[in-house]
Each structure stands twice: as structure tokens, then as C-alpha cells.
Length: 466
Ligand SMILES: [Zn+2]
Image (cartoon, rainbow, N blue to C red):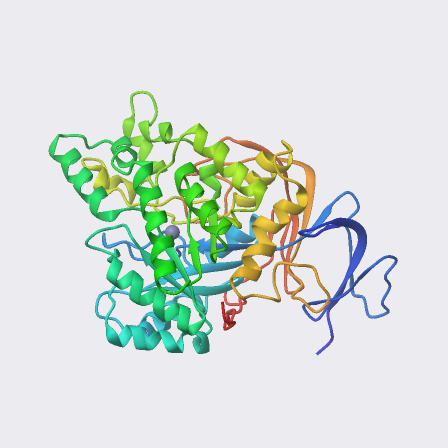
């Protein structure tokens, strides 16, 4: 087989710590050389990158693809449409949740998710196993996770009666994770208290989407975040990753734990950095439009947005992910027209993530280009056990984005590349977007053109000890 050799010339390479002018030579899917005036007689393709930033492909560690919602439907994007949308946005590695269903073993769970992904994946991918029905056999199975290529376990403190687990389960799973070198990812909201508030709201006829936010007040996220942190300490200092931190009080709990030297890391998600809970009030004369913004934890206040940006700047938040959980407005969100508790929770952002963080973060001077690269690629890759991703280092996978900082784009569901019928960011004009996206040396996206194919994505065997 002829070797594929690509030379990317005259770009400005941005890493998580610096930037410099360089050429990159890609051979057989890997980065072979980084330097100036590179030349290789085997080169079959030359890519001119003058005026472009050359970035490592984005890594989105929080997505829900082809995931049943307990409402007879699964999330709209499968492993092809979701991955294609991700690639158009500059993301080349996607980790998704594999949710255990009642009575399933963890091995059955993982096999089921592998089957969903195998023939469809268009970018490289991996899974976090979500424990929802814990017993001694499941605790035993945790010992196998790393050999299965999964070093992360997800637990839900919310969604009572469905995915929620109690403190006893959290503690026992964390104890095992500490012992086995696994990372526990926790959705921190007090599900018992939310359940009470939701029932009271519905009984009072408060059924519009805004009550989704009002029955999940921020202190219930702060309380649960603190509780997860203390349970992790009780489990002997189990490494904890706080998913989708949205609230200043929750972030403060993370900052305090980190200041004590505890092994606590956290992410926020892109929508929490610009949208407030007022969106859930909907459009004038159409309160149900607010359903498009129903996700958990809910959107918060301007003060929280400011706190999250500070957290990105100070390094207390380690990833900007999406929590891409695509429920269409026409068929899925509509289930909750009479009752907000029936609106499927979650919203799409897998394609918009990098463009929005660049536009709102880099273009405004809130974060540097290097911080941008760290947050969307380098840190999540390293934290989640993918040493061959997230940096343009010799020997790494050639997952490369040519980023055009001058290009402008109007975000719209019409032109997005997933299976969704709305965008939370409809009409937003952003400056800076991918011009070319490469995964292991193969061009997936060139301008508006899709060159990828289903089934080419490779499962990332994440077996390192956390
Ligand atoms: Zn999620």
C-alpha cells in the first residue's frame, strides 16, 4: 500500500502552551515531523496553511449519541450524524456515554454501545460506562473496565426513579474506582429535592418550560457538588470529575477541593458560557419555544457565566465540552407541551463548540489561543487517557484542524450537519472556523465539503490508570 504523505506548510501551530510558525509532515496517519522548511520526496499532498492556525483536533468528552431517553425515543444523532457534525466543527475525537439499563451487566451495556458505533463512527470515539443499576456483580465488573478500554465511570445524582443512584452506591463505586485506577464522573444535582419541587410545580399547574429551571435551583447543584467531593474523599481520595459545572457555588466547591490538594477536575459546557435561564421563558407568545433550552443542569444567570469564564481562565475548569444530547423540537421536545417534566432533557452543540469558544473567548480576549487549545483538546485528551490525541506532537495521530480566524459563519440548524431541527445558537454570527479537518491524516472536511465516511472511526482503548 502506498504511503500517504501530506505536508502542511506555512501555518501557525498553536499548542496548549505556545504558538510558532511551522510545517507539519503527516505520514500514514501520524505526525512525522514538525519544523521549518520541511520537505519529503514522498509527499503526495501539499496543504497551504498561510494565514491559518494549525490546531490539534477537538476532543469532546461529553456526548449522548443514539441514547434511549425512556420516552420510546433515542437521541436524534447516531454515531454517524453526530460525528459528522462534530467534524464540521473541528472535533475529531468524541467520547459518549454508554448507559446501563435496568438488569444489564456492564459488559452487555458496553457491547450494545459498541454495536451502535462500529459501522457508523466517522471520527475516533470511546465510551464512559454509566452505572444506573448497581449491585455486587456490577462492582465486580468494574475490575474489567480498563481491560475493555474504559477508564471512566459515570454516576447520576439526579433523575430520580431513572438513572439516579444514591449516596451508598456513589461511595461504593468510588471506593472501587480508587482501588482500580478509574475516574468517577458525576452529574451533581440533588435529585431527591428536585423531584419534590417538580411534583409541587406540576400540582400547582406550573407546567411551562421555565419551571424546569425554577425547580432545579443552583444551590442543589452546589450542594451535590460538595457532597460528591466529600464522598470522593471518604472513598480514600477517589479521583473525581465534575461534569457540566454551571453555577458559581458549584465551581467554588471545586476550587476549594483543588486548593486542598484533592484530585478533583471539572468541565463546563459551551451553552453555559453564553446563555441564561431566561431562554427557557421562550419567545413572545410562545412559551414552549423555551423547551429548546431544557437541559440539566439548567442554564443559569449572568453572574454564573462570568464565574465560569473566570474558572476557565484560572485553570479550575479543564474542559469545555458539549453535553450534546440532541432531542429534536418537532418530535421529542413536543412530548412535554403539557408538562415540562416530560420535555426530554438535553440540547445539541457538538458542531458549534469550537466556533463559539473561539468567538466568545479568544476574539474577546477572555482566553488565549493556547488556553482555547487546552480546553477543547489537550486537557480532555490527557485527562481521559488518550495520549495520542490532543497535541501536535511527533508520533501522535494526525488529527489536525486548519483554523481560519478571519472566516465568518452564521450558525443555523439549516446548515448544521447533524440530525437536529434547531440550534440553541440560531443566527449567532461567529468569526473563526475550521477550513480543513483531518483525522489520522485523512481529510474529513474541506470547507463545506464532506469527505469522511461512516465506519472509519477507531475505538480509543483508554486503559491508563487514573
Ligand atoms: Zn450529559
